[in-house]
Amino acid sequence: MSSSTDPQPVPGGLVWFDEPPPPRATEQLSREKVVAAAMAVADADVRGEVTMRAIAARLGVRSPMALYRYVGSKDGLVDLMVDEVYGEIRVPASGDWRECLRGLGLSAWEAVQRHLWFARLAFSRPPLGPHALATYDAALAGLAGLHQGPTVRMGFIDTVLGQALGSGLAMLEERAMRERVGLLTEEQLAAAARPYLERITAEGRYPHFIEWANDPRRFDPPPHSFEQVLEWLLDGLARRVADRT
Image 1 (cartoon, rainbow, N blue to C red):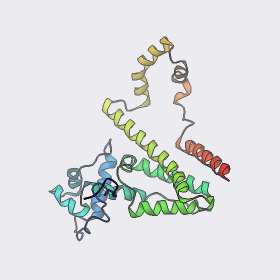
Image 2: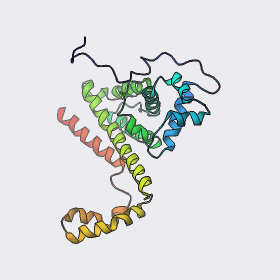
Image 3: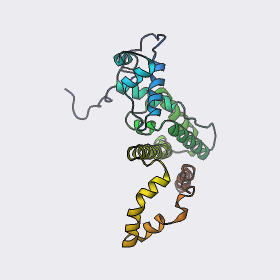
Image 4: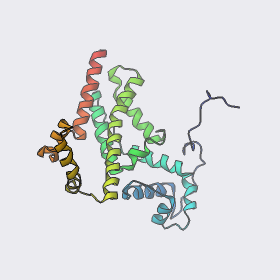
């Protein structure tokens, strides 16, 4: 009988370790084809959702149950989808830790924008697939010149990747909201919010927010782009390195 202190298994297992190898590929089905179709379905869905039925329809397969032979379970499919996106993230081979993190962050942001669903699913499963492990290993190696322990270096990496994933998650949820309420452009969203903003402006209870809301430059290209926020993060990490040194 296990105790509460015993290691707990990953929910659903990990497709690389707990599932048997997929069967031989056919002209219609293979693990690679199922994963590619799942990613295409998720890319096209406004919420990044995917179902076995939709994947089967895309592949021209009559029974969605046939797909499970190649991915094991829905969790196994998520493992494979998430790891495929980690395979799109590039870590620059640079001896400079800041350049390494900058390149990692920008590459991750590009991958997230291509696959917004990744920003949500990346938090739902442990990043232990071969592509994820290779990405983290390369990033840890790129930060070796910091002469910090692996836990500190991993904290730096998670800070940068977390910004990319958090920004992507916000973009995914906003996209779904806009689709749901039919406000697809900035102009439509501004028009819908205008009566409420006029009311709180008249009340004068939130002067600093009102100043921002009524600033005509609010719709200019934002100064807080992902690239700018990434530089702010790197500046903060650089100060930490300097302090510890």
